[in-house]
Image 1 (tube, rainbow, N blue to C red):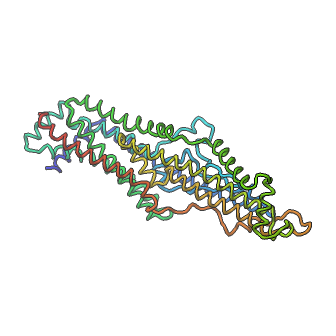
Image 2: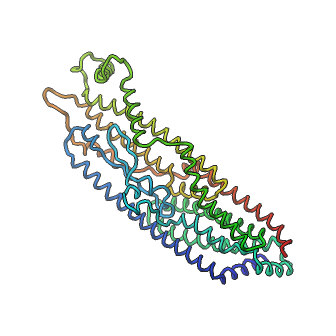
Image 3: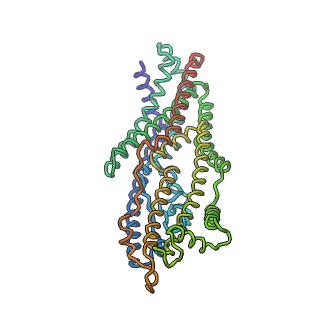
Length: 473
């Protein structure tokens, strides 16, 4: 009996012109989004490879120079974007994918599309994630609002109940008919994405994360189907049902997801970049001035070097004092910057947790966090990139400083110089470490738990709505 109801409801949906029209539109939108996402992914990868080659050539062409001059010349770290970013680019359009690496400074990421000063810089193109979280629910509303509401639906309901079909069978049969369209869309997206993943590296890991992303979207959309059918069962008028569902869509898809980040940012404000640099510089200066206040900074560093190597005169030092000073200053400045950047990351984590509270009112917040976590396009993934780039920067600069330190001047030989390309060759170019699923679960599971709670609440709502059907005939 359930299969008969599903088949009958699917036929009715197929014959409904507006449903067919909007279904074609959402499929076209997803197809365009997939093509656009794949093109962006190819462009990101090709640009990164080309930029890495230019950066390496620029570094090696310096030849023989002072190591600390080379440290200020600097290099760049380029982020390898996850293949699943073609489905959900997350914050990539806003945070950038490259970081300048130089001595004594931590730079923010740059190179994002919004860095360009054009009218289209702030325009975010269609994405698969946007189509599934915003437009697909709207199509489901238009397809399912009259499932039980309206005169024609009531007449059909009388006939079905008179034929002995239970209200539970009717409700779940019509809900599953809508879910069939959802399942078809997810299978199409998953199939195309899987084919693309096969062309890249580590496809097995990509398949696992793709499956988790699609499972989250499935729970999200099936939850919305249950809410839509439940509201339709509770409303006698199709107009009331449509108005109610559109209001819920506006609040859950547009209003709350945009209010939550604003409220979180106001509750936990983050210092601007100039303020951050100023605070870090002050901390660095304070750490340099620690110790004997009667000595100048140069005298304090000289005293520290003499005490460390157990000599009484600078001429007896087994190291280059300038190199020792650069190494010491780099340690202090790095500690200062890392301390202040850690405070910023803590504030971002608090903002994320506060936004998660708003997912109680909008499952869209939860599915966006779930999807971006597995696509590695969320703020946490960006912070992992910044941390890895900073570790690479510090090792690069200190290798140069240690080489400078370990070559004291001999007679009137002047400033020390070396082939910095050969010196840094063992370090290699920056590569972003691969993150396993076990490291992403702690970030993803709270959003997944919220989605499951929403699905359970929707199922309970539908069960209550079943009891209303008897009084509708």
